[in-house]
Figure 1: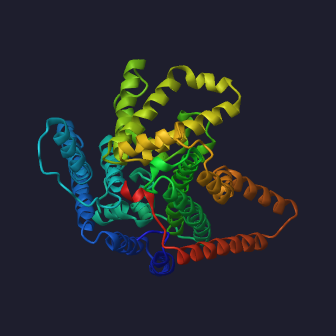
Figure 2: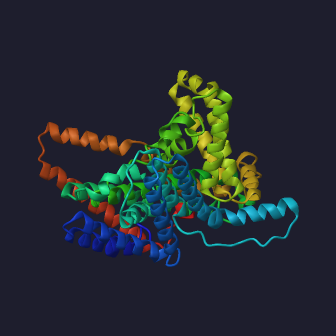
Figure 3: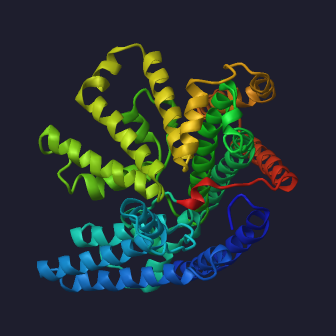
Length: 475
């Protein structure tokens, strides 16, 4: 089940809200949310929900053991190591085993049987979330969770279960047992959810259709240069609005149930450097690797060679986290090289140049990076790069020009929507309303009308088309 589906919008979510609000105590609300969250996951993964529950129970048990032996450093570290190994072993088996054996066969000429598993949805996200609990418990940053049901609720909470953001236990520890579900929270949550839904349904899905006509058309070798450019631009917008829209929906749902999740995107395409881009893109993932890998390795406390080594490890893992394929590793190493160059001097040079130079530089390197990210098949990547840089029929073939006429306006609007334009318009309207002493009732009515329009447009789009992919399911 996905948020951008009619069954979620008009059956699952209303029922969950009704039953949660009928429960007067937070503990009872937690039971209701846990039941709905497990059902939500089982809807798409009726078997692998057992794996998720087993992972949560094991992490809970090792957490109790760490807390019990808090004064015994060796035993405490032993239980932490065991928790990390068991949690990551699921990723190793389900996500990377086939990739590992495939490469062993390719390198050594062996004929080992390649295991094939269906990847449990959201396994990368809930694995990392449970790790934040047990690691922070070991460090003494959080208290042990005595209730296994509360820890399972944290692990499986449906707003962030499938595709994040990666919510750290420390961020919602207090909210699990002490939170308030208010009308203001519901109103704010609905607005944020519908904005994310519109991003996904009205922009990301449209961009995805353009991607299917170009990058996924099956005739890469026949693309002209303009088609290749339009295709990778469409993917640049698809992945941003798809994922940031889902994060917005998750944050909005959190508000509806009394939870406050941290922001996961801050208009990354307005950045003027790769360093700034990664402070704005998928913030929960980049800060996870910073706090749980980079800093424990030494971070910036040592000399430049050690810092670069640490960055290499982090970005190799970041690429690998996205998928068991060489293109993701290449994508991670690509950003490692860019960030290293910026670290040793290019970033300070960028800051002295006109802002437009930084924006153009960031746009070019990010768009090229998405080409590395998109093509799992390295031969297809080579063909696409050939069409992008050395087009056979030139940059302005007939098909490319027609495609530009058909989709050029949409790409411009998508580019504008990726900028912080709407928040500024919203702030301007609010200041204008205050200046003319507009009543809160009028402002609330206008916001409600806008939300209804977004819901109707999104519903119409979902009902009219079966094209509703979600990119981050595979991660």
